[in-house]
Length: 170
Image (tube, one colour):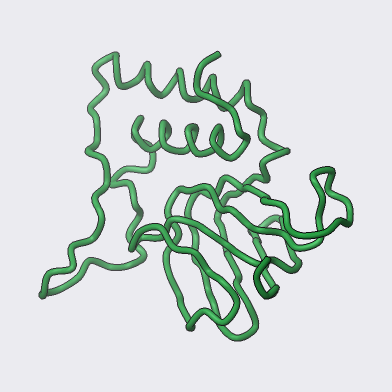
């Protein structure tokens, strides 16, 4: 177990998690990143991703325990801020693993995949930003060119299923 630090996962509606953790992992615009105690200051744009938080002192039943347990959340974009105080994730939309309606997520996946199969124009998968010299795109640009596209809906549904520990099959 690493050195604990403060972590908050917040949406406009509520605080989903506030407590000590020994690790936070997520996918930002720049790629996969893991934060440990003492991480350098960082501000980034969060992709549609599963956020993994190594919660200190929580057993598998959510009670006080020894060591750490992984808490997962499906996050549909936002921002992450890291400083000497800890990690704050500001998400537009997020759900904790145990709150996800798996049947609804599977139905959303099937519906979105059906939209791709029925001739609905497919937006290309987003690519990682180029590291070449020259002007960069805005770091707050959405990861999906069209958040209403079937591909964006497929990504969100798959992230929800992954966070819940479920498979895409029925």
